[in-house]
Image 1 (cartoon, rainbow, N blue to C red):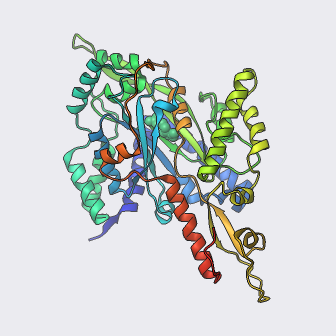
Image 2: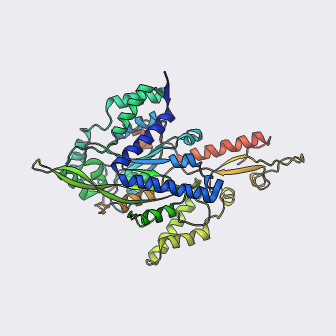
Image 3: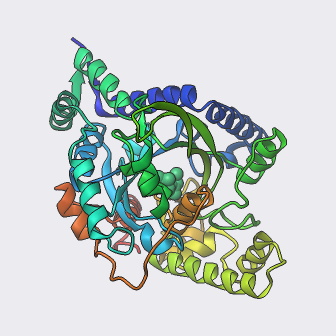
Length: 465
Ligand code: OOG
Ligand code: NI
């Protein structure tokens, strides 16, 4: 009997989730259509260069999802479902610190980690957990009520978790079990028709709309699914042209003529979706909630810690200038800062050890017997070695906080006089019962391996680096 491998499960899960979400949020389908059109146009205009950061096949199928859960237990269960799909927790994001308003969550991203798996299907899910223990947002009474409410709900049925554990161990499932697993997994992220307890939801909403979205209902749902686009500025114009109301900005690096780095994201505003509500008298009335939005992103080159420090520093400069010049367009200020301080080519990023690359033996090895020169720079310059950028597969906390907040109608409340509850990557690893991987270590490993291969194939005496 045929079996379905992990990557096939992952690809099928992403595709079915996309279909389900498209039915729930029709504007998402528009976003996917426009993204595809933009990608086709970019491919036509730029040819092979358009595929420098991923084949058109990968980019067209590429999505990230976002989900939000309430407790460490729910997070651990989500991790089991993702492990079945070959997706591992990478990175720790503290959005409480990245946001000015009330975004009481910490997050990680579940994704494939090795190059081959990413190439097969790069599906990733940004996963946030409510920080109910943080007194800046929740007092003791509310924390207790929240914890009681969350302890009584079940997001993932035992049958789903059992199938997930089996897929994680066996790295595949028989066809019938795979079908059952996929059905239950997609169902776990569908919007529930169950009436929302209006008073409870509103109690949480006064603190944070995110808290209400997570802890105010008895199930979870996919918050957004994000397609990848090759020209996000063009996408923004076309969506606006179709009358879709977008948030004010594109988060992340500005549009400029140099290399794309990290991640640029934007979204359309959260839509009011009809939801049944139960009033304190027990009546069920129709209401509307505005929490789900449509995001789109463009991915660039993964930066090293030094590259990332430069990025963060430049964002700080842009902030300062924007504060001094409130009437200037932020994008213009950012572009000017970038043009002064960000390396304008991939070669400079590589030479400055600011970006990660996969190195390969070059095509035109000279045959005069003089042998390769010493040092990576010379090898690159003389064509002995080529460098292909490694794509950034992760997220940016500040952009994530920006996306969260730009879609909220109120800032919520936070009490910064209170000491925040401490969470970090180690805490998260403990809660998940598995290591939260360091994204830099993953990129570094990919680069180091490629350099070792180059050294071997060129017969160089030293490892390059
Ligand atoms: C997650 C927001 C972060 C991103 O792409 O940075 C995110 C959420 O809204 O749950 O998805
Ligand atoms: Ni997102």
